[in-house]
Length: 391
Image (tube, rainbow, N blue to C red; front, top):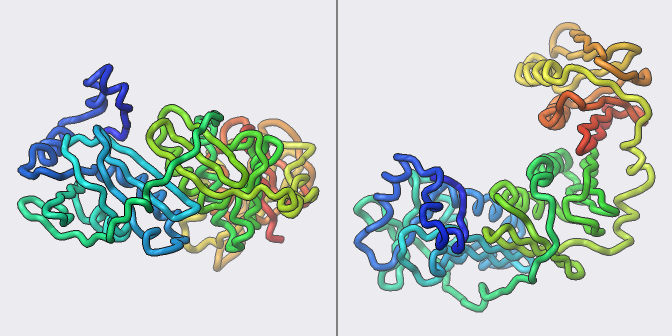
């Protein structure tokens, strides 16, 4: 089924919009999930539920109470609405209600929903009968345990959002920034720092710098939030709006989703995160270009072979750099990469292959390599990374 989510206005103006990208298999699936002999039921395609679960996998890690381990599901006109409250983390997501039927709002444990999605083929069909929630499995209804529904718990409102963010740029880089924060086990390093129009992170083995993902604001955002936002960015087709009120950030994803979460804005915090030494880590004088695809492919194969170690040595010379791979048994093997252009200061650096590969996945023909204070600089043009040497 197409993952596009049309707005109510689009469907009113062009009813065929809902069929964009629908294939034969999708039509057969819809036949099985519409026209069922039940009064109150909904059908949730797995493909549209997965982004919701990715968000909840992140936000529910710090569940504050039993309700924070549950998801509210209801219907509003042409939409199925999902609401999650783990204050101060709030989340709402909407998908099309293709059955045309409705259900009363219900609170279902997230763990139950995850297990159901893992064990149905294409659609998760909830049937509500006599105040009981069931999942439809062919001709059978399987009871689904729910939590006592408390309307006021899900009756939260979001701030209006008006500041637009750069969606294409976020699609290109936000997920990789969030993923690279996994390089550290230090909780204080699992943050994105935004200041003066720039976003930074310091994950110990690797540092990152990019144009600010969240406008010209001074905020610190946790990895838990970044993982959730990245999942929503991947699904958003048209735009993202933002509002920051004190230490609270609200995001709206083109009518698809809304979320609210805490951010750090205390000026004293930024002196801790953004020391002069850290900011200067991205500065370099000379740089070189090499054939990135050859470098990336070589590292991928070395990384896959269990008789190599997970580190390589890169030695910058006058007209080339030499990459040395280390075998667990036997001597090292050297590979030479001639400079296509540029010059580099003589330097020897030892770096982890997985981290270097994560950066090179975004490399292109204009990617620059350099060194700074004994570390490797990889400048992708739109973002810059500093990979710390293990020597």
